[in-house]
Image (tube, rainbow over all chains, first blue to last red):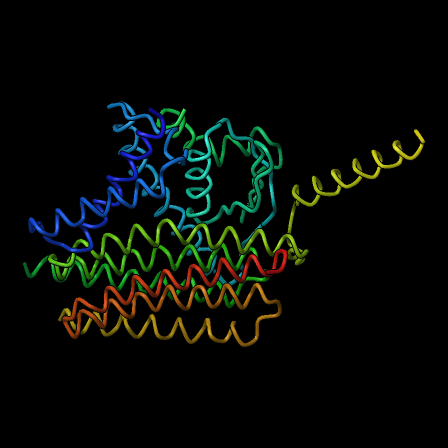
Length: 165
Length: 125
Length: 86
């Protein structure tokens, strides 16, 4: 059952990418893409457990869409913040590497959390040891673990906990 | 139609300004980690905005542009994380403005623990 | 009108690539150079896409996809080499 779910998710990702790249809905193209997606996902996803943490429920879907919006807003906000730091003549930076804790257990959830932290400017994941993330922060406001966790991680974690558990 | 074209062009211009700011950050910042912060992330958003703008001018190219945007959004944080990790691994120093370095502290602690364990094992013999 | 704005954008991207090139030449450590390389390739994707608008050829977008893929692979492999050797 588990590997079947992996297979289905992998198949849909490959098929959607095929349609987007070809940019058309011709019958021959669709059949070719269908066959090749099945072959490729049965070869490469025979025993993988990459997607087995994803919950395929309506609530998770709604939270995924909400998460994308929250992420885009954070991305633009922090980009303007960093742009201000670069342009201002006195270079107002206050950098340091802080430690934060994460509650997420699944590999996929952790990967998306660290990628989101890295993609919002101002924070950069340097290393991950067990459940501690080491984050380079361009403007260190606090060095305590709990407060830094609340500042950096929690507004992404709130949504990812529902999606990946 | 005309309005969509002009909106796309202005988005492209904003994206190119973000790329410019990223390059300025790479020139101005004092150490490797801050250069990664300002450089790679600002240029990521800049390139994504540029692609969106061109996608608005040519709506027929939607598929490939979407693939490029998703691809950049997935691979770029991975490459900047990997570079930061390598830089910390070979002990490139942080700038003098740095407040705290918890990762170095935890690495030193781990090394001391390993040394203690080794000495205890020697004493046992 | 649209083309004028796009030419200005192209100019900005080219200037920023020249600025990162300065960092590529002067950078003190090897990681600095890899960062400069990464930013240059990502900005070049923008240039390729704008040029594909001027010449109206869809094939340049495929070139951009492969270019981004190769640059990502290159950066990851160089970082792995810096960290523990090949």
